[in-house]
Image 1 (tube, rainbow, N blue to C red):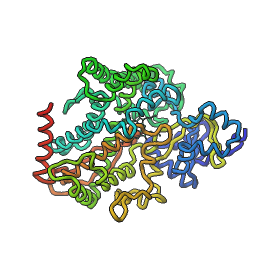
Image 2 (cartoon, rainbow, N blue to C red):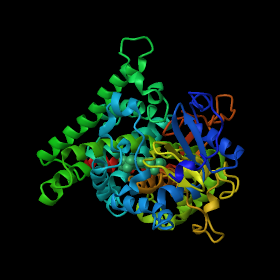
Image 3 (spheres, rainbow, N blue to C red):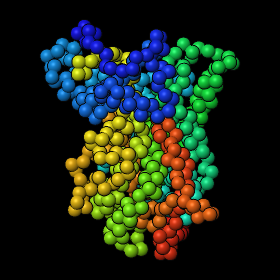
Image 4 (tube, rainbow, N blue to C red):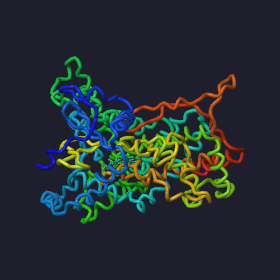
Length: 517
Ligand code: HEM
């Protein structure tokens, strides 16, 4: 009752009925959210999406208070009757649910992807299994797969130096197919990667709140497919088939390999093995394994590709960073060898570059939205139950009070004068993987993949801006595709071996691998 008398957070005034629906841009909306926050001098913004409240959290402080430290917020009011009930009912989940958009959950039938699932026992089952295999220690068991596809990437850059995004996409797909299913994909036109790519792009396209009109006006879900303007119904049907095939096809191949005893160590084989154990049977089943493996491709392929592609863009603009990184690599990595994960502690500058890439062009700028389950209060404002809550990670990672010149790619910001990682600087990993209970469970694996690929590419390649036939430098456009995951548009650059020895090193590795196969 008390909360209902409080004012809503500030925000632009909307029109009757539609509210701010037409004010929110379809692309890069997090930039507009941040501008509004500045204009209203607030870090918590209220928008009205034709009746559905949308709340933007624009600073680390507010995100931390609401999504991470809820227990602290509650301990301030520990005698409050409602708080006590919440603790008993585990409504600690009050901001851990996802908004359910009719396009995704009902029409596309994506409830089997746990990244989109509502908080509850079903989500917990999925999350627990994923955590078991991907926490900091466990995910190290998959590093050999990550290393192998990284080294294959180096060979691809020798053979097709122009196709930056294509090569990175193949590397990311190869890594996940090996880790999730133990499948070694084909070098070109792999059927598993092809179907997964199609499905992922359609899923991510439907991921942003309000992308489809039916998300704002759910009544439209009853419009029949044949009606003019019902294109979304046909799209949804097409996506549903794609996504289901993507989840089922590689899983059944992995299961067959497991049954024939021909399965390399991977997530699926490990889970199937432990399913034989009665204790594990109680908390997961085959459906959970299949859903988790499929979610890995959806959540882990374009994200990893985007981070490395952005990193290359940052390096192209800053040749001095490449020079400093190569000096470090030449000092640490023994001649005739490629970087390995054992070198991580001795290559702080490569770690700084990886962190800067994750900060500079934040891959998931609005993390992933949440649904507020109960009326809440923050700094004297009322946050109504049912609100879509958008944590603006981009605003945190580009906050001038935290980072000097936040739009510059500058890994040196993470280094101390004596060449160590500066622990005093706000770590972008506190925002780029999301927050609280829904924080990215693949973050350890993803960080390792980005780190080893950046280290290895810099160790053996010179990376420069491309030059056209007349000798003019081709400036990369720095254009991005906006979406739940932000991806750079294809760009040109020059990636050439640093020396004859570097080329031989890459080829030598590829030859030794193929003789082992
Ligand atoms: C650069 C790479 C990556 C980035 C930037 C990234 C970022 C994120 C973010 C921001 C979220 C939303 C968190 C939230 O709601 O607060 C998320 C969720 C998720 N990520 Fe990642 N991710 C990456 C790679 C991966 C990889 C490699 C995997 C799998 C192996 C993965 C699996 C997931 C899953 C399953 C979720 C949903 C978690 C849930 O809803 O409980 N991600 N990720």
